[in-house]
Image (cartoon, rainbow, N blue to C red; front, side, top):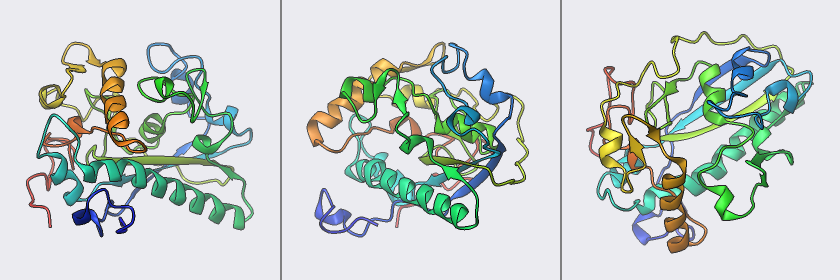
Length: 265
């Protein structure tokens, strides 16, 4: 929840960012992780779970869906992100980190080893340490992907905009950790990487900088420039998220029940 001190505008004080999380579990030695080394997917700089943590057995992935209030706010202007969305991106990510640490500590208290790739000193976005130069922070690929981990753990498949479509949609934040705790992996209820995407083109129409096309998917470079513009405008805040709102996959898998049109509280 956003405090009065954090709020970018007074009405945002008290904003609840997330609804209840989704959890997914996978095997650290799942062969899918090796496929991400392909330059057509992520690239050879990607590190598999066993490279991050030798002896890891399980991957824990979670998705925190944004509340209707956050999503509703970002539907109002398709040329610039809502302040509520910026809070969801920054304070929301801080909460994701807290949750990952909480889960990690819980496993460690039970005698297991656990680690969080995103917080490890080896985490890189391309060849730049994170956090590093802002030119590397936006638009490039990292050596660990929350979306790809979630895909392996059965949480969802990719959209045209490269977001992950979960049963609570794309609008939200992902986190993950690795552990040597033996956890039963979830079944993946899909066979292809984009099984839940209908390629309807709504995200193409909503992108303010034309970074998404039906033929080529998303351009990280164009998307990154938009995000950098918001970072220049707001300093410590950045984001966009127009491809994740007012689309069939905003808050559900397309064709399944959704609260997309529900009024924000």
